[in-house]
Length: 383
Image (tube, rainbow, N blue to C red; front, top):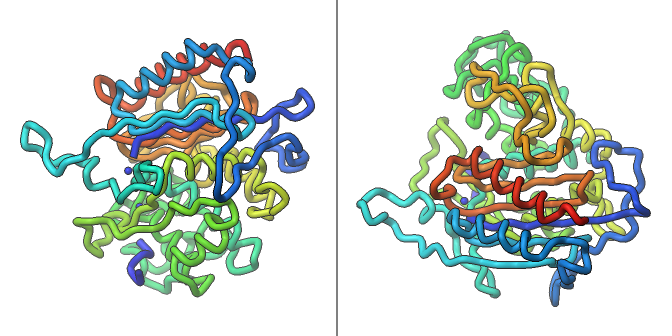
């Protein structure tokens, strides 16, 4: 596992909580942790609740899930106040080759099943938001600071930029996608002056945390995050067919719909799981879920943000007007991965939603999101 320092499934999970008639504001670190939030046990039954009892329109909720299932989802789980509102799974029967002979990307993202038969999948860049929280935990432990230069942990020459330019790149620049490097880690602009979605540069964050903690990624992730909240089916995996090249991540975060929902629930609960504080540094959590810079207001610390005036994607050369998902609540924050793998947290609607699986059939990821959230909000209209 020494090379796990370099990040696929379809499921949807929705979690809700109501506190004294007021919604939980994740972005307000001063607000109290919800008292009425249900946290599922590590083992045993996960409590259920009828949609009608939660104020949801059952038929419209079914329609929203049917839509997701028709778009190559492997599973959908909906929770209200942490309890299961509805849960479904679909067998996508991953095979190495598609009928047309092309390689099936989804096949290479599946890494077994749980004891309940739920698929464990590499969730692609959803892992970035997990790593963001690991960085916050590491900072609280005094192991690092987001203002530290990357060279402090990886040494000189970790990039292909000149040493003086490289020395100015901090951990915060990696968390905000403003390193000023190209995907090949070559110099493009001064750190902090250009936004580029750069997975190659991002992958150094996990290395930094591992070096600072003097632990392998699997060990520190289990001790700090997954074990405390019962994500027992989640772990880092070496990606098949990947080498140690600097092109992208050579590891992935493999998890399930339910486990990813637990992570979203932790974020909704402001870093606290039941009576246990997992993410102590609330100011870091607040900063991670807000605009981290002016270049791309729709990006925090490895989290995507809805409700902003514009969005940059990819190399950052094209600015798209309007919010990330116009049909979703403005305060939605998201962890996004390839092939439509998503984790959404919506404080105002008291929701956590995860969608895992293959690329939505018959639509691109953006149009699928728009339509899915349109249907989901119609189901939640009576809530």
